[in-house]
Length: 122
Image (tube, rainbow, N blue to C red):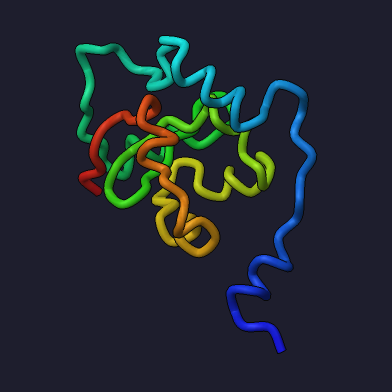
């Protein structure tokens, strides 16, 4: 009989990513110098409240919270191994619980460091 972790893993859909969306491609993009935060450098770090976060809830402008930090994940959407639809479940919301359910071992702070917008103040 499968435990809860095994059931969670087996119920996830695998998605074929488009060419240019590998982890190596993401690493290249994050080291390119492109502004992945989507905010002006002088505005960093922002203090983001619930209302502001909720405005960033679509594929063209997608922010989420992970453990109290706000990330602009718009650029990351097409790189997400679970597909865009899965990661959009966190769009404009605190995605900590969902993220930890499936990715507790992932070093998101390093992976998304150039996407960090600021801190969540609720």
